[in-house]
Amino acid sequence: MGKSTVALILLTRVFGTCHDPCVVEYNRGGHVAWFEQAAHAARAAQVQVIINGFCGSSCMTLASEARPYVCITPRAIFAYHRTNYGDPIPLGRDLDHWIRVRGGYPPFRGVPGRMSYDAARAFWPTCGSRAPEGLNEQ
Image (cartoon, rainbow, N blue to C red; front, side):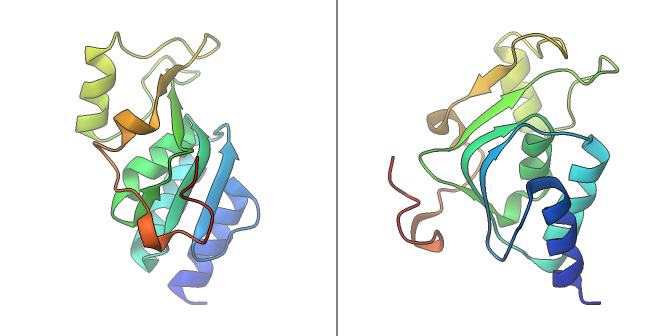
């Protein structure tokens, strides 16, 4: 089984049916380890992930860890909080710093913090022509 096939299987486990590119319309997150595994596989296989809507918690972890192959559309919005163990969700240092400067990570069962598309553009490239037709519209 090739790297790309493995990556798409793991991405499908966390997002539902995925192709290359894998378009995320709405994802509330889930088991951090599954999202990290999918992120590493997507990065190794160079599978493009397009964030085109809500990407919460572990989804944001995946977007952080697979960053070279992730782009965002104007519909992208990220949410973050502490894990059910009380730790911050795993993110790159720059994202972690951005969150801590803005008050830190809300509790696991609390109202999650949000990162808008405008803020996210400092961390991820916009998809531009890489996105399928119609995804770059608000």
